[in-house]
Image 1: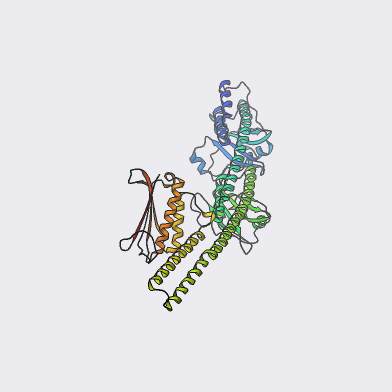
Image 2: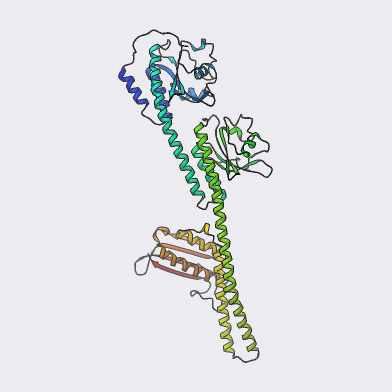
Length: 535
């Protein structure tokens, strides 16, 4: 329905109109383009207020509202923008033809304005087409100076809406391409992170965090099935403290749960009011996606991406991309789990080899040493061997036992290390050696680094440093009464000849353990071992 108005030539200068139309198509960001359209409509027609409502084809309503002329304080007073399902806005969504009224309050289709909304009289609405589809509707109200909008106003707005449709269509295509690119990159990053040895709990957090950022959601949540047939939140990623999200459950028998267990995604317009949502935290959130993490016919869990109350609903493109991301993430989790199992199998095989080495080397050496001691005892009992020779034989036996003990300690160190956890940096390798030594010493050695150890110490020097560290830690293990061990790696040391070098210092408070103990000289209790090398 269009009310007549006086005809005449447009009062807007043509160059100004052309400049405005060119400016509308200058931005590839959809939201920036929407704002430019409503700002231009206000400027060209003299309207006090303008709005562009984006049509949600799935609901025949409005999914987004962009306004001009309304201060932030006025917008804040409006509890919720119109949804376009009723009243004059609903009629424009359904009929998709221009609508011009001198007084919208007298139209029988009018249903008033939301609480807090300013009073309005004159009205002009025009559909915005993008690639042959209605993208939204441009609304103008309250022409400045009073009176209704004119034919010229309607013509100008229709031209603006046509140009805006082309610009919005291009911006939508660009944004869709960028969205696809971001989600693909996100899926690739998740796959790479999971296949580089991430622990199971960290893997779930990686998926939740990446999905939350990509979906612009308030939270990224992972739920896993419970023994009683329900689901429980096991991981939650939020910009702030997740609070009591972790541990929240969905009880068995929920309609949402039935869909998820069946491998179907669930899309919710408003979690707080949807009767299918039964969790105690649902009141915090609005639009939500719940996506099954399913691979090889097995349900690993559910990825939930809720937005805040009153947040922007998810578009069909976002739903599709998130669903694909969940499928890729589930497959990556399965592959990461299989890889971790293979690595553990390699660990077990390595430990089998170590057990064989213990049997072949250590046990045989202990047996030979025992035979030697038994022979010496018998010969000494019959007085066939002089006492000095007995002491010499016993000394050799003690040395042999000390070597055997060192073999056992080396084996223990090897058993403490797994391929998945082996660090590659100098700093990480030093920390690994000291952590392994704690299994034998009891107290964990304290470690201090000086300088950029990882960048200053080249690999050949690092290998020799680690050999010296292992030897010093083994010597500390052999000494009795050791309660403290300190390791100091200084990559900024100056050697006696003035060259730059790295210095390793290992100190302990133990006492020499008897014959064959080896190690550096000590003055009283406590030993200091120093090793250094030029860089």
